Image (cartoon, rainbow, N blue to C red; front, side):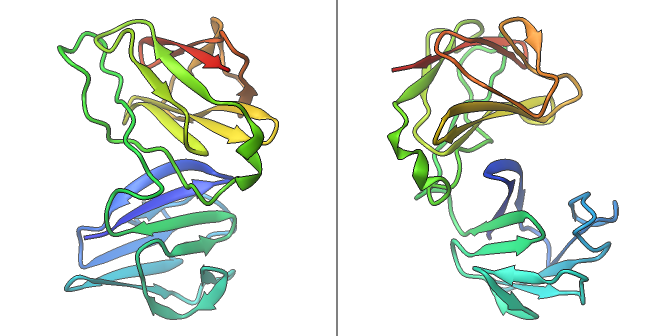
Length: 218
């Protein structure tokens, strides 16, 4: 059983486990995977699971479906293939590991740190960021208080799925904090995030899903 990791500009937007014989992808709300963008056709592509194999088929979409940069009509997906639809990249993974690492779900008041449903992201994205110094997030409140999460990957997602999720992206110029999902936006130094993203500086205080954290670099 495979997993799809959808990203835009290096920021992970959603993860989807492939559990059905047919999984549809498109702009219309009735699709299994909805990507609300004009570059995506209403019914763009379908993934079909045949035994342990997963095929992807383009449904005569306007802008086409690409795998690893090559336009396809129907193709068997291999582990780590990257499907490109518009500006979106969809990584197909047969198992966790390699480019991904587990992070933490923040559950204020719970008895112990939980496993994570979210991930750090593509090791292949952003090789130009190699010169940026190491950084970490230190949890200040909640059950995981005192724990540090090293930002070793290009994109790290933090939060509570379905409630509030944010990402920290490692770029050549530094680390950038962005809102991913949730009706309420996270805050940095007590100010709610209003734009798409904000550059982080060492010592910045982040509040996300009811948990306070501190960004530390160097």
